[in-house]
Length: 221
Image: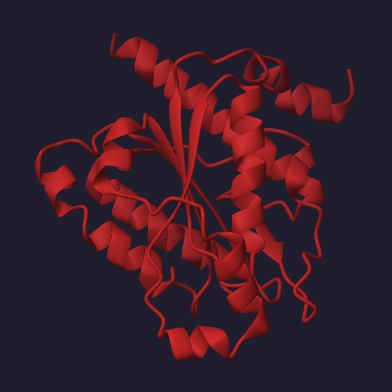
């Protein structure tokens, strides 16, 4: 047995088992399309693990005139026009939630922050307790605030009473994606393309989130 096999054991096998009845909401904000793609990969991974998945965007807050002046932004709005806008009902429905956002000065974008700030009713009624959550992000350079952005999301999740399920170092695929234990993060070049190959890491993170949600769901039955 090699070093990586000893380190990671059989987690990959376990996380590939069918996880029935877990409901996952993948909630994203995307300006240039990166986090929309990450969300679609998360959907693929979660479905492979047997989850029921909703991919949802948060409401755009930027003025239309600003969006129209940026070709990449405009293209993303067009590409995601049929994606439903996330609601409190979607969060209540979900057993698990994966958030995917770009970094904004080491923090989550205002669009996602507003969405979270609007969930006071769910929080007050105890409906955010024990939701299993995980997060992903992107930036234009390797030290552009990815970890801080994910931690800003996790701080809110602690207030929710949610159960945070980061990828850690639970599979060798994470090292090829940059090795961020907080959540998958990717660097986006000036051409708008992802530099690291993170598809496998995203799918692993989604499967792990579904796995943890399955454990929690079974424990509460």
